[in-house]
Image (cartoon, rainbow, N blue to C red; front, top):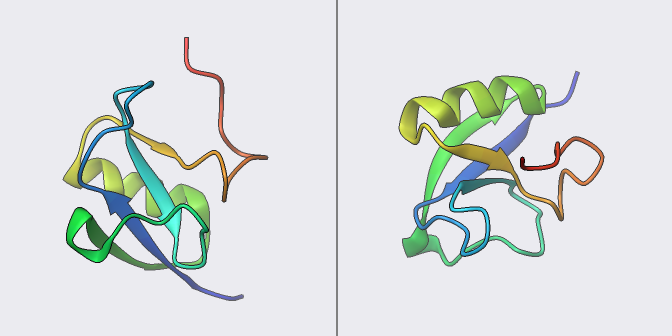
Length: 73
């Protein structure tokens, strides 16, 4: 089982108003001073759960989690 490093943006998305959770290799990763390290996790759900302890309104980045992101209602 592989682990990935995750980051959460400190600024909410302009459209969804939610903070974005990114994997460390995401092409849309914010600048280092605009994100918080969430840590190493074995899957997206674990990382998202921890990120929600930092910011309540978090969603997976649509670029690095396109198959996992649910539509915002």
